Length: 372
Image (tube, rainbow, N blue to C red):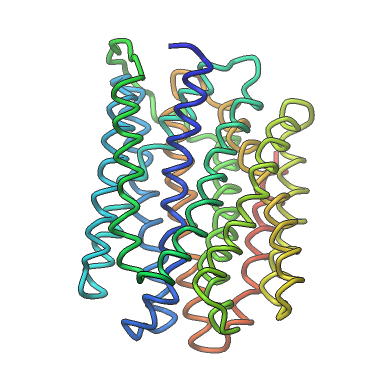
């Protein structure tokens, strides 16, 4: 298969996979109102998809290295994600939503370690650029899906959104099955213990804290907007702006990671974006919030391709899938804690107090990566 086709298909699959992740946060204020949920319950619902998304990634990354069957792993994951979304739309209780959200996370857990491993192996000489373009696909999905979800929810209700969006996942599954030509893989031994070294551990923990900052913002920005009496379309608009400018940020970050020291790029961008995200969450003025959403999204999203490239630099090529699986598993599991902590603090004190955690997470992620 040509590199251009691989880049295009993985771009599209990443668009759908990451776009799905922001549908629930966009709709959370509407779900919380209908089901009379506390902020802690909202935090749990917003975090549970990330728990299973994280828990499954190490296993799927290991499978991709062991079996070499990346195509079917990606198709199976997207199918599970799409079916789970449909059942979330017909759920009649909080418990059912939690269960299907966990299964959606399990389906979404397949894509990242398998695809990033695939791209890192194929684009050896311009890996940063290729990862930046791939990351831009994810950000484009996170730009398009929230605004569409917000508008559709305002017109037809949040359940309608969950029943319609699976069509996009099914379409991508069909394209992957029909267009991706996969050579027969050979089973091989995977030395997992070789990943447990300091230089890899530091990248993984840095990702975890950066992911906590991202998830805290993603879950609580719509809740803040709901408190300001904005509509679901506005919730989607702000998440779309943050991730839309992140499309450019991903490409810039990928290019910078090919030119400069990756740990320094992660540190500077993470700390600066942490400050901007806190300001965004604290402002009451609509137009000022729009400006900070764009700027914070631009800087924050430049971190992702840099971290991905740094991890693959530090792991053997035959271990990329397993290493990325461990990388994403720890990162997403840590990220799932952020909305739960912020929900508990909001119930005990105030939402504004909980916002302080977002820059703290970003600062920790930026500082840890500099350790030798």
